[in-house]
View 1 (spheres, one colour):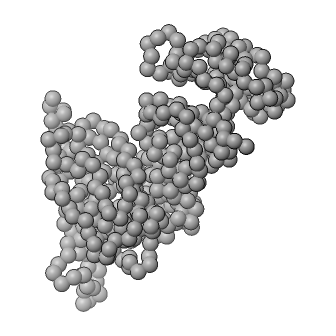
View 2 (cartoon, one colour):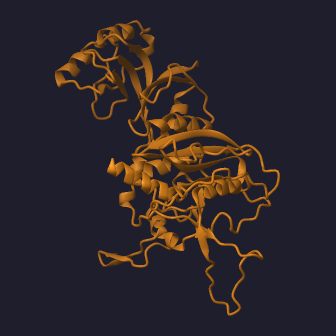
Length: 434
């Protein structure tokens, strides 16, 4: 069977991330596709072809930025009547296989609205289709969509009309399941659930993957069957709040551990350790992660620190056996990013992905990390910006292509800038005074 055309309808959120997530999922499932219309962030509609519906269902099972996918039959840029004529010209054997199935029609409008009577009139335009089965509005075997796209036009007539058969919806339910507001413990740097799940897709996380977060949050990508490990220089972030809370006379722990139990991921979390990525317990001889996913601290919600090394190497235990807490020093953003890249070049599998956030101040006069730095051991896969007022952060995805020349190999830190925290709050103050 040859390839069929499908209409991908994306959600109206995080438009800059949609194509990158789609391509990541195609690679994850080894799926080939061909674009038949040009993709643009300005439109949620995109026509592509796949080898089978099974390929589409695999993508939908993991996609958080696809609303639905339809088998594409026709598109008109003129009118609904013209769309109906185009569908009428399609060989009827295409629809014959659905003749006796239960069905329903859905009139789907984008950036416009229709009255109930207008929707019924629209459905009547397709009354010639050879459907003899019962109409079932609750659980039909087939659902046919008429989509009316009225985006970015001041004309009376919408700019495009589509007709297709519903294949499936994206996996938006996961976003509600992992909603931050529903968690027992929210850390100071807890990531929005939707973005966390998208990051896991960008990292090609799958069942059995070994995933590491060097600046640990409160829930990781283990919901996809991966094994996760985390670390942080601040043990309080891992342990949670000292106090607990009572609910229905039961003591409830508020910590990373309580979140893991809440989502029943105990068998997927390998553990956590208090360390930084410059002084860590890992050994380079054969130990590798499949993915490193992180949101490095940049001093707005939580400041970054690292262990201060004294001359003579690692700290040693005290003679009396008591716990010793080494001194820490500020960890500026350029150092964090470059150390993260160098660490990942050693401890990622070849083909493994590094996914991290890079904050940027929107001011051309600032000597800033305007673009994510490259590394000779990595290919740059995508750079997806999330825009805020006066600043943005870029979701950077890199894929390891080779091992470094030596364990001690480091790329140079060629950006020596004022701490991001200072520049961020200076920018916010200037904006408020403007």
